[in-house]
Structures are given as C-alpha cells and as structure tokens.
Length: 98
Image (tube, rainbow, N blue to C red; front, side, top):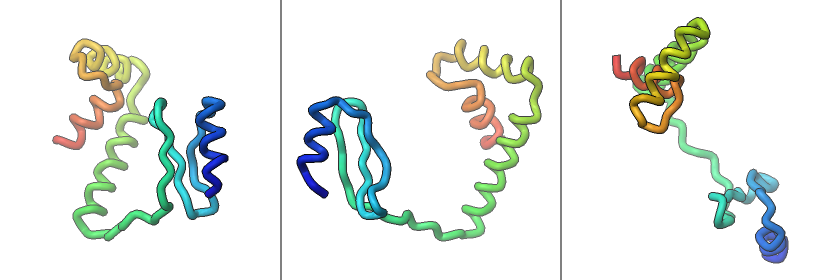
C-alpha cells in the first residue's frame, strides 16, 4: 500500500475503514489509523460453536418478537442499570445466560 495515501487520509481527517483488494484492512479508532494484513478468521464449526450460534439466533428472533412496549421495558432497565448497554444487549445477555 502506498504510505502517502494513508498519510493523506490522516492529514485530511478522513474516516476510512474496510478491506483493500482482500490484501489489507484499514481501521480507525477515532484517533489513530491502523493498516494490517487481511485474513480470513478461523471458523472451526464445532458442535459447541454451532449450538451457541443457534442460541444467539433464537435470542435475536425472540427480541424481534417482542412488542415495542416490551422492548421499552428492557431499554429503560438498561438505562437504570448504568451498564452502558442497550435494551437489546440486556435482553440478549439475560437470554444467553438462561
């Protein structure tokens, strides 16, 4: 990658991220720009992993099945708990622990 492109993006305060030709990943944390090699994450497809993904999928579907007022209860509770999470995150946390 041409270093001048990255330096120009930093100088102009661009918010850039993504993959470049499946060779590089460009990320920013708001202050710094990071460039690293692209890689395909390891995905073992183990029975435990598949089971956990299915549980997560069921949790998302359960959330989507809630009424707006039921979702609001979780949103309000999340604010009161001050865990800096959304009602969806709180619901999923509880769902995955059950």
